[in-house]
Image (cartoon, rainbow, N blue to C red; front, top):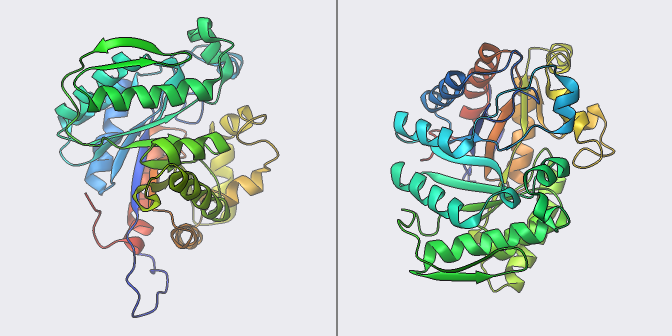
Length: 355
């Protein structure tokens, strides 16, 4: 086991939570080529629970995006995350079930409230709902052409408000700019009250939704300085909305690529599909970010280097590495990276995985 980061003898060390993203809708974007099967997705989740990870995630796409169609002659299989997580729930006992993330503007809130509440009932209260506006405008416009001109940020905020009302009230009506329904009585309610919603994304709107409406903030692939600054903004939005900032979790979706040397790590990353995905977001999430900067902002390196990065995130206030993306060109390589991380990194930050 790798050494733990040094801590003062009198300081209580705060444990971190670690999760795994399954290849529900990531095949061809960053996860194994040839593409993962439905059975592979379940295999990754079962392995994650055995290794002591806190959560297992599923990403969301209802259609392939333009860059996927240009990159592959045959389309990948994108498995619907809520149905997939329901199958995982039936075959696991303690690991939490995260949407990391679900593209909220593409989802009808009445149906989604019923689906998520049902999943929370079936799993005995293990759901974390990560939501965001989505990284690909072309997918949104293709799936929901009637909202092609809509502000996805407004649609997302209305969706969160609608979910809360449907879960909290016996009967609930909603009249927003884009989402409307009348006198809906939605049962069952979730086991959890409140069911945690994480606001996914790195932009100002994501921070605002986290502070005003959500239980957590879930950015992706940013460094400790941005986590620290983002926490301050989320807290300010929360206080302005009359909420307690200490009740809002700070999470992060990061990329993990481990190796014995930096050269080995770089070679592993560049021969995977991850760099294709990174470049596909060159006009949005990764705009102006070089490959070296991307490595610095993710858990990429030798185990000792990654341990140092994790400690820097913890010092910045991070609580949860949520739905973490492990680099692999095959499912076996992906699982091997999960095992290495569980062996060489996780024990340095917690004695036991909190449930």
